Amino acid sequence: MVLLGIDTFVQGNVSGLKRLRTGLLCNHASVNKDLIHSRILLHQKGLSLSCLFSPQHGFAAEKQDNMVESDHYTDDTTGLPVFSLYGTHRRPTGSMFDAIDVLLIDLLDVGTRVYTFIYTMAYCLEAAAKYDKKIIVLDRPNPIGGLGVEGNILKKEFTSFVGLYPLPMRHGMTIGELAKMFNEEFDIGADLEIVSMQGWQRSMYFNETGLPWVFPSPNMPTPETALVYPGQVIWEGTKISEGRGTTLPFELVGAPYWQHQQIADQLAGYDLPGCLFRPVVFEPTSGKYAGKPCNGFHLHVTDRDEFLPYRTSLSLLQTVMKSYPGDFEYKEPPYEYEYEKLPMDCILGDQQVRLELEAGKTPEELEIEWQAESAEFMETRSRYLLY
Image 1: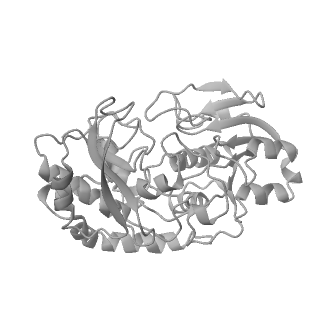
Image 2: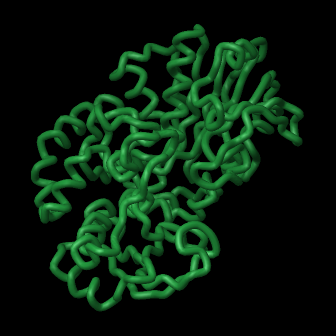
Image 3: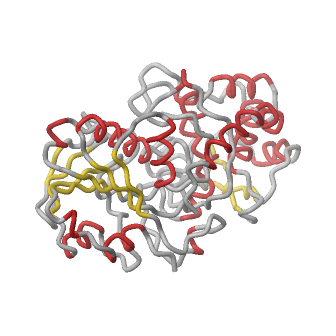
Protein backbone atom coordinates (compact mmCIF):
# COMPACT_ATOMS: atom_id res chain seq x y z
CA MET A 1 0.00 0.00 0.00
CA VAL A 2 1.15 3.52 -0.78
CA LEU A 3 1.80 5.70 2.25
CA LEU A 4 0.37 9.17 1.65
CA GLY A 5 2.05 12.42 2.54
CA ILE A 6 -0.42 12.92 5.42
CA ASP A 7 0.45 9.49 6.83
CA THR A 8 4.18 10.13 6.53
CA PHE A 9 3.72 13.52 8.14
CA VAL A 10 1.80 12.38 11.23
CA GLN A 11 4.19 9.45 11.74
CA GLY A 12 7.11 11.87 11.89
CA ASN A 13 8.28 14.37 14.46
CA VAL A 14 6.17 17.52 14.26
CA SER A 15 7.12 18.99 17.63
CA GLY A 16 8.51 22.10 15.92
CA LEU A 17 5.07 22.86 14.49
CA LYS A 18 3.09 22.44 17.70
CA ARG A 19 3.79 25.99 18.81
CA LEU A 20 2.76 27.40 15.42
CA ARG A 21 -0.71 28.37 14.21
CA THR A 22 -1.57 26.02 11.38
CA GLY A 23 -4.06 26.21 8.53
CA LEU A 24 -5.14 23.35 6.29
CA LEU A 25 -6.23 23.60 2.64
CA CYS A 26 -8.35 20.51 2.07
CA ASN A 27 -11.74 19.10 1.22
CA HIS A 28 -13.66 16.01 2.25
CA ALA A 29 -11.41 13.78 0.10
CA SER A 30 -8.39 14.68 2.23
CA VAL A 31 -8.38 11.36 4.06
CA ASN A 32 -5.71 8.81 4.85
CA LYS A 33 -5.60 5.10 4.04
CA ASP A 34 -8.10 4.41 6.85
CA LEU A 35 -10.52 7.13 5.65
CA ILE A 36 -9.72 9.38 8.60
CA HIS A 37 -9.76 13.03 7.61
CA SER A 38 -6.52 14.98 7.76
CA ARG A 39 -7.87 17.65 10.12
CA ILE A 40 -8.66 14.90 12.63
CA LEU A 41 -5.24 13.28 12.23
CA LEU A 42 -3.50 16.62 12.74
CA HIS A 43 -5.57 17.35 15.85
CA GLN A 44 -4.68 13.91 17.23
CA LYS A 45 -1.03 14.71 16.59
CA GLY A 46 -1.33 17.82 18.75
CA LEU A 47 -1.13 20.48 16.06
CA SER A 48 -3.03 23.68 16.72
CA LEU A 49 -5.29 24.16 13.70
CA SER A 50 -6.51 27.73 13.44
CA CYS A 51 -8.63 27.50 10.31
CA LEU A 52 -9.41 25.53 7.18
CA PHE A 53 -9.36 26.57 3.53
CA SER A 54 -11.41 24.91 0.78
CA PRO A 55 -10.93 24.78 -3.02
CA GLN A 56 -13.58 24.80 -5.76
CA HIS A 57 -16.75 22.78 -5.04
CA GLY A 58 -16.62 23.49 -1.30
CA PHE A 59 -15.21 21.66 1.69
CA ALA A 60 -17.75 18.85 1.25
CA ALA A 61 -17.35 18.81 -2.57
CA GLU A 62 -21.08 19.50 -2.71
CA LYS A 63 -21.08 22.42 -5.17
CA GLN A 64 -21.46 21.88 -8.90
CA ASP A 65 -19.36 23.67 -11.54
CA ASN A 66 -19.40 27.47 -11.70
CA MET A 67 -21.43 27.73 -8.49
CA VAL A 68 -21.07 30.76 -6.21
CA GLU A 69 -19.74 29.58 -2.86
CA SER A 70 -20.00 31.01 0.63
CA ASP A 71 -16.89 32.92 1.60
CA HIS A 72 -16.75 31.93 5.25
CA TYR A 73 -18.49 29.26 7.27
CA THR A 74 -17.81 26.91 10.19
CA ASP A 75 -16.79 23.27 10.14
CA ASP A 76 -19.37 21.43 12.27
CA THR A 77 -16.91 18.73 13.33
CA THR A 78 -14.13 20.93 14.67
CA GLY A 79 -15.75 24.35 15.02
CA LEU A 80 -12.96 25.81 12.89
CA PRO A 81 -13.63 28.65 10.46
CA VAL A 82 -13.49 27.62 6.79
CA PHE A 83 -12.40 30.12 4.15
CA SER A 84 -13.56 29.38 0.61
CA LEU A 85 -10.99 30.07 -2.10
CA TYR A 86 -13.61 29.78 -4.81
CA GLY A 87 -15.94 32.57 -3.76
CA THR A 88 -15.36 36.29 -3.61
CA HIS A 89 -11.68 35.51 -3.12
CA ARG A 90 -9.63 32.96 -5.04
CA ARG A 91 -6.41 34.25 -3.52
CA PRO A 92 -5.95 34.15 0.26
CA THR A 93 -6.18 37.63 1.74
CA GLY A 94 -3.86 39.10 4.33
CA SER A 95 -6.55 38.79 6.99
CA MET A 96 -6.97 35.07 6.22
CA PHE A 97 -3.24 34.48 6.53
CA ASP A 98 -3.01 36.59 9.69
CA ALA A 99 -4.52 33.59 11.48
CA ILE A 100 -1.70 31.19 10.56
CA ASP A 101 2.06 30.73 10.58
CA VAL A 102 2.09 27.68 8.31
CA LEU A 103 -0.36 26.28 5.76
CA LEU A 104 -0.62 22.56 5.12
CA ILE A 105 -2.03 21.57 1.71
CA ASP A 106 -3.62 18.16 1.34
CA LEU A 107 -5.64 17.90 -1.89
CA LEU A 108 -6.28 15.15 -4.42
CA ASP A 109 -5.48 16.44 -7.90
CA VAL A 110 -6.60 14.41 -10.95
CA GLY A 111 -3.69 14.97 -13.32
CA THR A 112 -5.33 17.38 -15.78
CA ARG A 113 -4.33 20.99 -16.51
CA VAL A 114 -7.83 22.43 -16.12
CA TYR A 115 -8.54 21.01 -12.65
CA THR A 116 -8.51 24.12 -10.49
CA PHE A 117 -7.16 22.70 -7.22
CA ILE A 118 -3.58 23.14 -8.40
CA TYR A 119 -4.15 26.85 -9.08
CA THR A 120 -5.68 27.37 -5.66
CA MET A 121 -2.44 25.86 -4.37
CA ALA A 122 -0.44 28.23 -6.60
CA TYR A 123 -2.31 31.25 -5.24
CA CYS A 124 -1.56 30.03 -1.72
CA LEU A 125 2.14 29.82 -2.61
CA GLU A 126 2.01 33.40 -3.88
CA ALA A 127 0.25 34.56 -0.70
CA ALA A 128 2.77 32.70 1.46
CA ALA A 129 5.63 34.49 -0.29
CA LYS A 130 3.87 37.84 0.13
CA TYR A 131 2.91 37.41 3.80
CA ASP A 132 6.00 35.46 4.90
CA LYS A 133 4.28 32.16 5.72
CA LYS A 134 5.42 28.58 5.22
CA ILE A 135 3.68 26.04 2.96
CA ILE A 136 3.85 22.28 3.50
CA VAL A 137 2.33 20.14 0.72
CA LEU A 138 1.33 16.63 1.76
CA ASP A 139 1.74 14.73 -1.48
CA ARG A 140 -0.83 12.41 -3.04
CA PRO A 141 -0.82 10.13 -6.10
CA ASN A 142 -1.68 11.31 -9.56
CA PRO A 143 -4.65 8.95 -10.06
CA ILE A 144 -3.97 8.53 -13.79
CA GLY A 145 -0.30 7.73 -13.29
CA GLY A 146 2.91 9.67 -13.49
CA LEU A 147 4.11 8.59 -16.93
CA GLY A 148 1.48 9.71 -19.43
CA VAL A 149 1.92 13.26 -20.76
CA GLU A 150 -0.28 14.51 -23.58
CA GLY A 151 -1.45 17.66 -25.30
CA ASN A 152 -0.46 21.14 -26.35
CA ILE A 153 1.19 23.58 -23.95
CA LEU A 154 -1.03 26.39 -22.69
CA LYS A 155 -0.22 29.77 -24.27
CA LYS A 156 0.19 32.82 -22.04
CA GLU A 157 -2.60 34.81 -23.72
CA PHE A 158 -5.09 32.08 -22.76
CA THR A 159 -4.20 32.06 -19.09
CA SER A 160 -7.25 31.62 -16.84
CA PHE A 161 -8.25 29.88 -13.63
CA VAL A 162 -8.34 26.62 -15.61
CA GLY A 163 -4.78 27.18 -16.76
CA LEU A 164 -2.28 29.49 -15.05
CA TYR A 165 0.95 27.91 -16.26
CA PRO A 166 2.30 26.38 -19.49
CA LEU A 167 1.30 22.77 -18.87
CA PRO A 168 0.02 20.15 -21.32
CA MET A 169 -3.50 18.87 -20.78
CA ARG A 170 -2.21 15.69 -19.10
CA HIS A 171 0.90 16.60 -17.11
CA GLY A 172 1.88 13.33 -15.40
CA MET A 173 2.93 14.98 -12.12
CA THR A 174 1.86 14.76 -8.49
CA ILE A 175 0.52 17.81 -6.69
CA GLY A 176 3.76 18.01 -4.70
CA GLU A 177 5.85 17.96 -7.86
CA LEU A 178 3.66 20.68 -9.36
CA ALA A 179 4.10 22.79 -6.23
CA LYS A 180 7.88 22.58 -6.59
CA MET A 181 7.70 23.47 -10.27
CA PHE A 182 5.31 26.40 -9.77
CA ASN A 183 7.36 27.76 -6.89
CA GLU A 184 10.77 27.53 -8.57
CA GLU A 185 10.11 27.69 -12.29
CA PHE A 186 7.77 30.67 -12.09
CA ASP A 187 9.68 32.57 -9.40
CA ILE A 188 7.07 32.49 -6.64
CA GLY A 189 9.75 31.94 -4.03
CA ALA A 190 7.62 30.72 -1.13
CA ASP A 191 9.06 28.85 1.84
CA LEU A 192 7.93 25.42 0.61
CA GLU A 193 8.31 21.89 1.93
CA ILE A 194 7.00 18.73 0.26
CA VAL A 195 6.17 15.69 2.37
CA SER A 196 6.61 12.83 -0.09
CA MET A 197 4.68 9.58 -0.31
CA GLN A 198 6.26 6.23 0.27
CA GLY A 199 5.79 3.32 -2.12
CA TRP A 200 4.24 5.26 -5.00
CA GLN A 201 5.66 4.54 -8.45
CA ARG A 202 5.08 6.59 -11.58
CA SER A 203 3.55 3.65 -13.41
CA MET A 204 0.77 3.27 -10.82
CA TYR A 205 -2.85 4.03 -11.52
CA PHE A 206 -5.02 4.78 -8.52
CA ASN A 207 -6.49 1.29 -8.18
CA GLU A 208 -2.93 -0.05 -7.85
CA THR A 209 -2.14 2.06 -4.77
CA GLY A 210 -4.27 0.14 -2.26
CA LEU A 211 -5.87 3.43 -1.21
CA PRO A 212 -9.61 4.17 -0.98
CA TRP A 213 -11.08 6.58 -3.54
CA VAL A 214 -13.09 9.52 -2.22
CA PHE A 215 -14.49 11.74 -4.94
CA PRO A 216 -12.66 15.11 -4.88
CA SER A 217 -15.44 16.93 -6.76
CA PRO A 218 -19.08 16.05 -7.46
CA ASN A 219 -18.49 14.96 -11.05
CA MET A 220 -15.34 12.93 -10.37
CA PRO A 221 -17.01 9.87 -8.81
CA THR A 222 -14.43 7.21 -9.73
CA PRO A 223 -10.81 6.81 -10.85
CA GLU A 224 -12.22 5.80 -14.25
CA THR A 225 -13.72 9.28 -14.55
CA ALA A 226 -10.29 10.77 -13.93
CA LEU A 227 -8.81 8.58 -16.67
CA VAL A 228 -11.03 10.01 -19.42
CA TYR A 229 -11.20 13.54 -18.00
CA PRO A 230 -8.10 14.98 -19.79
CA GLY A 231 -10.02 14.59 -23.03
CA GLN A 232 -13.68 14.62 -22.11
CA VAL A 233 -13.39 17.90 -20.20
CA ILE A 234 -13.33 19.71 -23.57
CA TRP A 235 -17.11 19.20 -23.87
CA GLU A 236 -17.51 21.79 -21.10
CA GLY A 237 -16.64 24.32 -23.80
CA THR A 238 -19.58 23.22 -25.96
CA LYS A 239 -23.35 22.88 -25.70
CA ILE A 240 -22.97 19.10 -25.90
CA SER A 241 -23.65 17.14 -22.72
CA GLU A 242 -20.52 15.82 -21.02
CA GLY A 243 -22.67 13.52 -18.91
CA ARG A 244 -23.27 15.85 -15.96
CA GLY A 245 -26.58 14.96 -14.40
CA THR A 246 -25.94 11.24 -14.96
CA THR A 247 -24.11 8.60 -12.95
CA LEU A 248 -21.27 8.57 -15.50
CA PRO A 249 -20.09 12.17 -15.92
CA PHE A 250 -17.39 12.57 -18.59
CA GLU A 251 -17.63 8.89 -19.50
CA LEU A 252 -20.88 9.73 -21.30
CA VAL A 253 -21.12 12.35 -24.03
CA GLY A 254 -23.86 13.21 -26.50
CA ALA A 255 -26.72 15.39 -27.70
CA PRO A 256 -30.26 14.79 -29.05
CA TYR A 257 -29.19 15.42 -32.65
CA TRP A 258 -26.30 12.94 -32.73
CA GLN A 259 -26.65 9.82 -34.88
CA HIS A 260 -24.66 6.84 -33.66
CA GLN A 261 -23.75 5.19 -36.93
CA GLN A 262 -22.81 8.41 -38.70
CA ILE A 263 -20.39 9.36 -35.93
CA ALA A 264 -19.00 5.83 -35.56
CA ASP A 265 -18.29 5.65 -39.30
CA GLN A 266 -16.35 8.93 -39.15
CA LEU A 267 -14.40 7.94 -36.02
CA ALA A 268 -13.20 4.78 -37.73
CA GLY A 269 -10.80 6.94 -39.72
CA TYR A 270 -8.88 8.04 -36.59
CA ASP A 271 -6.21 6.07 -34.73
CA LEU A 272 -7.66 5.85 -31.21
CA PRO A 273 -5.85 3.11 -29.28
CA GLY A 274 -6.94 1.63 -25.97
CA CYS A 275 -10.62 2.55 -26.06
CA LEU A 276 -13.97 2.07 -27.71
CA PHE A 277 -17.12 4.15 -27.99
CA ARG A 278 -20.27 2.20 -27.15
CA PRO A 279 -23.51 3.75 -28.48
CA VAL A 280 -25.95 4.69 -25.72
CA VAL A 281 -28.95 6.90 -25.04
CA PHE A 282 -28.91 8.83 -21.75
CA GLU A 283 -31.14 11.45 -20.15
CA PRO A 284 -29.43 13.97 -17.85
CA THR A 285 -31.37 14.96 -14.73
CA SER A 286 -29.60 18.33 -14.61
CA GLY A 287 -27.29 20.48 -16.70
CA LYS A 288 -27.32 20.45 -20.48
CA TYR A 289 -30.38 18.76 -22.03
CA ALA A 290 -31.87 18.02 -18.61
CA GLY A 291 -34.85 15.71 -19.07
CA LYS A 292 -34.13 15.16 -22.77
CA PRO A 293 -32.83 11.91 -24.27
CA CYS A 294 -29.34 12.27 -25.74
CA ASN A 295 -27.87 10.01 -28.37
CA GLY A 296 -24.27 9.52 -27.48
CA PHE A 297 -21.49 7.22 -26.41
CA HIS A 298 -20.03 5.64 -23.32
CA LEU A 299 -16.24 5.89 -23.58
CA HIS A 300 -14.72 2.60 -22.41
CA VAL A 301 -10.97 2.42 -21.75
CA THR A 302 -9.71 -1.03 -22.74
CA ASP A 303 -5.97 -0.42 -22.29
CA ARG A 304 -4.92 2.37 -19.93
CA ASP A 305 -1.32 2.42 -21.09
CA GLU A 306 -2.26 2.81 -24.75
CA PHE A 307 -5.21 5.18 -24.27
CA LEU A 308 -4.74 8.80 -25.40
CA PRO A 309 -7.60 10.72 -23.80
CA TYR A 310 -6.88 14.12 -25.37
CA ARG A 311 -6.47 12.78 -28.92
CA THR A 312 -9.57 10.64 -28.49
CA SER A 313 -11.88 13.45 -27.43
CA LEU A 314 -10.46 15.93 -29.94
CA SER A 315 -11.14 13.37 -32.66
CA LEU A 316 -14.75 13.00 -31.55
CA LEU A 317 -15.08 16.79 -31.35
CA GLN A 318 -13.82 17.22 -34.91
CA THR A 319 -16.17 14.49 -36.12
CA VAL A 320 -19.18 16.20 -34.55
CA MET A 321 -18.19 19.62 -35.90
CA LYS A 322 -17.94 18.22 -39.42
CA SER A 323 -21.06 16.06 -39.20
CA TYR A 324 -23.43 18.64 -37.69
CA PRO A 325 -22.27 22.14 -38.67
CA GLY A 326 -25.78 23.54 -38.28
CA ASP A 327 -26.31 22.09 -34.80
CA PHE A 328 -22.91 22.15 -33.11
CA GLU A 329 -22.32 25.17 -30.86
CA TYR A 330 -19.61 26.36 -28.52
CA LYS A 331 -20.56 27.51 -25.04
CA GLU A 332 -20.44 31.27 -24.47
CA PRO A 333 -18.71 32.97 -21.51
CA PRO A 334 -18.61 33.20 -18.57
CA TYR A 335 -16.60 30.14 -17.55
CA GLU A 336 -14.68 29.71 -14.28
CA TYR A 337 -14.45 33.47 -13.59
CA GLU A 338 -13.49 34.18 -17.22
CA TYR A 339 -15.94 36.61 -18.83
CA GLU A 340 -14.28 37.44 -22.15
CA LYS A 341 -12.50 34.44 -23.61
CA LEU A 342 -14.40 31.61 -25.30
CA PRO A 343 -14.62 28.74 -22.78
CA MET A 344 -13.30 26.27 -25.37
CA ASP A 345 -10.17 28.37 -25.89
CA CYS A 346 -9.57 28.50 -22.12
CA ILE A 347 -9.93 24.73 -21.88
CA LEU A 348 -7.71 23.99 -24.89
CA GLY A 349 -5.22 26.62 -23.73
CA ASP A 350 -4.69 27.91 -27.25
CA GLN A 351 -7.19 29.32 -29.72
CA GLN A 352 -5.08 27.95 -32.56
CA VAL A 353 -5.96 24.38 -31.59
CA ARG A 354 -9.64 25.11 -32.09
CA LEU A 355 -9.08 26.96 -35.35
CA GLU A 356 -6.92 24.21 -36.83
CA LEU A 357 -9.43 21.52 -35.87
CA GLU A 358 -12.15 23.57 -37.56
CA ALA A 359 -9.93 23.90 -40.66
CA GLY A 360 -9.60 20.11 -40.89
CA LYS A 361 -6.23 19.31 -39.31
CA THR A 362 -6.48 16.05 -37.42
CA PRO A 363 -5.39 15.71 -33.79
CA GLU A 364 -2.53 13.47 -34.95
CA GLU A 365 -1.29 16.23 -37.27
CA LEU A 366 -1.52 18.72 -34.41
CA GLU A 367 0.51 16.40 -32.19
CA ILE A 368 3.38 16.66 -34.69
CA GLU A 369 3.23 20.46 -34.42
CA TRP A 370 3.36 20.20 -30.61
CA GLN A 371 6.50 18.04 -30.48
CA ALA A 372 9.01 20.83 -29.86
CA GLU A 373 7.03 22.48 -27.06
CA SER A 374 6.28 19.06 -25.56
CA ALA A 375 9.99 18.19 -25.50
CA GLU A 376 10.76 21.50 -23.77
CA PHE A 377 8.10 20.82 -21.14
CA MET A 378 9.41 17.31 -20.52
CA GLU A 379 12.89 18.69 -19.90
CA THR A 380 11.54 21.25 -17.44
CA ARG A 381 9.32 18.66 -15.78
CA SER A 382 12.23 16.28 -15.23
CA ARG A 383 13.84 18.72 -12.78
CA TYR A 384 10.92 18.50 -10.38
CA LEU A 385 10.03 14.82 -10.30
CA LEU A 386 10.21 13.28 -6.84
CA TYR A 387 9.56 9.62 -7.71
